[in-house]
Structure formats: structure tokens, C-alpha cells
Length: 197
Length: 284
Image: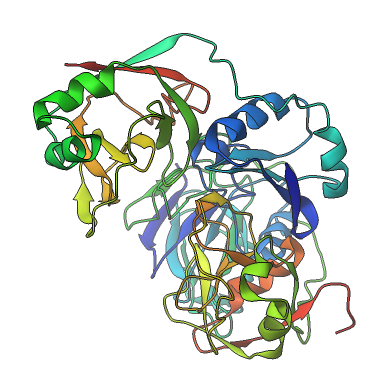
């Protein structure tokens, strides 16, 4: 674990990978007096700190473990009819595009972090499968509810946007609704099971 | 329902202190770019600092006061008129019921702030009334025909001196978390150069043009959390200084961080304006 100062009020903590970042972010919430605690792919950002120099000491008790998934599993129904099923099947070494759904639904996922857009969650769940490359040319518009893969992550587009991830299907679940409590369907730490619709 | 938007100008938005505590869900902070100007406007009409105001961009806006209100305009200097009669910039003014309020184009700077006694009372979203122009959280940007509710005034307008900083020097910078990606002299190169504000600058960030900051190493940065004031450097070497609507994570290295107290000046920089940096903690 390495603590890097980010200006006078923040620090970035390097932990190596997304599950550890999630574990640290969940552990630190309520323990570290920060305005924002933002896990990402390899780091956790602590912003709004009164004393960034004190952060390393405050994190000394972190056991350094990936989180034990807690809470209820959120089921996300997916219609696996995306345009990039063949690419994903080839990357994963499957016999055909129709096998992607089976592989994608067989394992529980975990929301490691959010970013890119409000309510856009990065889910981990297939550590043994080869990482999926991004599209060479991003699509100008990806429809809301598109379920897509890139690198080790699954993501769901909460609203229409440009996007370079490989789309495997779509869901009618509402990922983001600021008038709902909670606004994000899948905040960091949420357990998720994709179900073929 | 008390203010009718007649013409929103190029871009007018509702802003308060911003939306903190939601970055882990991907929500930008938003909030007034020139915070001292917004805070002054609120003080002048007797509002608390957290009241929502209107932020204009270059061209001002026109409103109709459907009820009588005290209001004031601060920030970028501009003509202010009520029913065609000039009123003072930075001077609380009574707009009678039915009157036309005109906030003119900025004479210098970019963003003017309109505070109304009682505050703009649009419904808060995640604890803030600010419009986030990146992700669309909060009220939409103002459009002709919008009716803005106004809250209950807490007290009478206040008299205050309204000085603006005289000659702004360079913006202070602290070393960024990835300054080492640009070699040991990265901050010197940033501080030795003149940077020009590009025309595509907005509430997300000030886009700078100058001698490119070349990376000293290759490789990709995994997306990581970004703070307000981050100076992020894409592969073309032209820095982007993140302002209130910045994305909460980013995949380009941050060479330096401008402290929040200096960022209000970025709100008033126009395309083509020159900008310099200096190391925080060293004499100007």
C-alpha cells in the first residue's frame, strides 16, 4: 500500500487491484473522515481530508483483505442478444456466441467501483477468463441498459452515451434514478447475479 | 413560481455549493465555478452561502420577475437593467412584480452570478440544486419559458464592499500524483511555460494550449479518482485543468493539482487568455 499526496486536501492510495480497492474503500467508510472515498481499478482516492499526512496512520489497521461479499444478491435480468457476442465468445474460447450467456451467468459478480457516468458500475466476477479487448472504434451511441464487457469488467450503461465496450445484451433494470433511494442500483460492494431473460 | 426565463443566453445554470459525497457513484460535484462571486451575491441579498444562484456564461440572460424580488449580479462585470433602467453591478436592486430584469454580456471575464433574496428554490437532487453539465444530474440548463421558484427571504439585503482581486498572479500548483510520469522536472516545465486558454474550455475543465508536456514513460494508467483542480495530461501533452463538472475518475496522469482557493479565477478566463502556474509554497 502506497499513499500519494494529491494537493493539499486529498491522497491516492495504491493497492494494486480492484477487489483490494473495494475492500479498502468499504473498510474506510465511517472510519476515515473524508468527503469522498472513491475506489477505482487499482487505487482509492480520499478527498476532502483535513490532514492528508495523517491518512497513512488511519489506514494502518486495514487488514488488507479483499471484501467478503455481504448483503443480498441483486438479480439483473439480461437478454443476451448483443452485437459483440461473437467477439466475446472467441476471446473466451467458446464454441459459439450462444454460449456467452451461460458463461456470464454462472458466476456471481461484485461491483468493484463506479465511474464514467452516474450509476455506471464496474463488476468483477470472472478472474479466470481472458480479458475482453475494447472495440477498436467506439460506438457513437450505446443504448441505455446495454450490458457490455471490457478488460476484466462487466458494465451496464445507465444512459445513452458513446462507448467502446463489447455489448453482449441488454437489461430493462433502471441503473440510475436520482429520485430513488438509493439512486444507484449497483453501488460499490453490491453482489450481482446476471440472469438470462 | 416567481422568475420567468425569457432568454437564457449562451448557457445559464442553477448553481450552489455543489453535490459532495457521491463521487463513488460517478456523480460530479458541480457547483458555482466562481465561488467567491456566488457567495458574495448571496450575502448581498441576505441569503445563506448555500443558497442557489444563477450562473451565466458570456452573454448574460433576461428574466421576468413575476413577483417583486431583491436581486443582485456579481462576478463578471456586465450591465444590469430593470425595465430598461440601469442598476449597479454588485448592488442589491428591487425588481418589482412584472419587471424585466436584464443581465447583459460580460464586459470582462465570463461568468456572472444572479442571486435572488430567498434563493432559487428548484428541488434539490442528491442534496444540491446545482446543474452538472457533464452527466446531467440536477436541474437542466435554463431554457426560455422556464419558471424558477424562489424561496422565502431570510432578511433584508446587506451592504458589503465588493472588491475583486487586482492583478491575479500565476495559479499555484502542488505536484500531482503522477508527476513522475513526466520526469523529474515536470513541474518546472509546467511553471516555466505560458499556457493559452482554448475555446473548448467549459465547466468540465479549462483546456490549455502550449508547449506539450511530453511523458517520460510509456504505458497506460488504470482509471483512478480525480480531484477538483487536477491538471490532467492526455497523450497530446495539452493539459486540462479540471473544474467543478469534472469526471470523478480519469485514465490520464495528473501532473499537478491547483488548490481549490485559486480555482475561482479560472471561471473568468476567456479563450485566448494566457495563464501561468507557480509552485505552491514558493514566493510569487
